Image 1 (cartoon, rainbow, N blue to C red):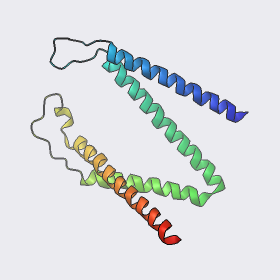
Image 2: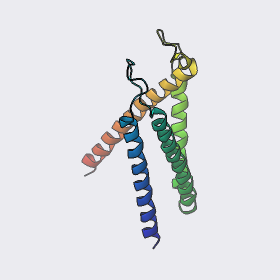
Image 3: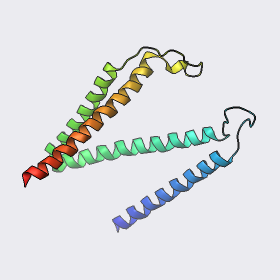
Length: 157
């Protein structure tokens, strides 16, 4: 009974989000432009598209956080050691982000337009470097994990 209710709820959530997303995308692509004579065309519904993306991102981030907390509490009751290992991984990830932020370069970039000058400050430059370096580190860890798992299977037999 509960599985059926969860399945119906998730199906309806998916359908509603897809319908709204398709409607917003159609409005964005077919809604026209602000100034047809402009060199760079700006669609009329750019703001609506960005707001929908922000809403979807916020819902995803909040639900991910809530489900992670819920899973941690449930796992802590049954398997405290496993729950603490998961918390340890989260702490290591936060440490990786801090290290990547610290090694980021905050030197302002030359030749920036007036529109982007507000982001040409050390804090935003270091945040950008943090994301780039953390992607590099996570991809390297992923490759190592794949190789380790494959080699373990090969030599474990």
